Image (cartoon, rainbow, N blue to C red; front, side, top):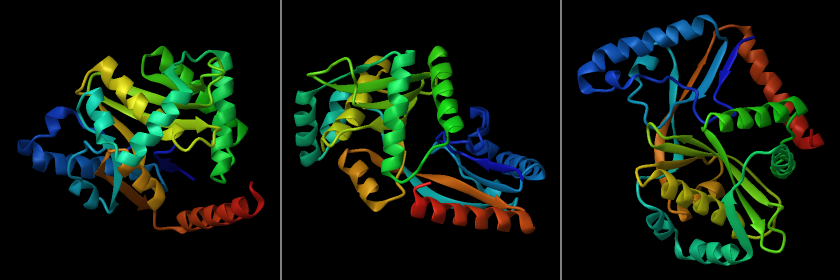
Length: 274
């Protein structure tokens, strides 16, 4: 069984060279995307992946029998650090100010102890939302983060109580693309009941990104599968930005067995906290 998914990165959909993005390339782009999808389908049974918000119209995928779903990510657009703070609503601004008085925020190098601490907090966060990560998945995530840090692509932004500044209680990994002026808040990890801490962590990370890499940098912190999470990101002043989710499955028994297995696994996970 062969499956294509965006998880755990943000987007694993098609990527086009900028020369194919203009209006004068529309017809060729349509044929290119159709051919790309057909070639992918030769080696896959199921395809469920998300395209970046910067990806152009995707009609070519429709002509290859793919389904397209419009979903939303939240993005802080171009603007300086002070503008980011000004985009918050009044309530979140108060929460953030109070949390900032109790915590210190900074970029933290990914040493072995740091990654171990992040893993513990991240696993706690996943379990809070009733998802238990296998050990091999957790190890792979840490290895990916460390490898991307060495390439200047991933960094860790942390928050620590002022009373214990050497032990962070919340962190978010950040992916940075300086060529295209884009960044992503990737994986968040925390163990705190402070209601203002996570808003402060996100906003302070966005502000530091713009201070260091310039106001052209956009900051994307993903989609919102729940209404409450979507509203939370609205209150932080990020713009709901549409993008495409691509869905395709082979017309045989394999996708049916796969989807049935996923449904059973999800049921067991929720009942048994698996």
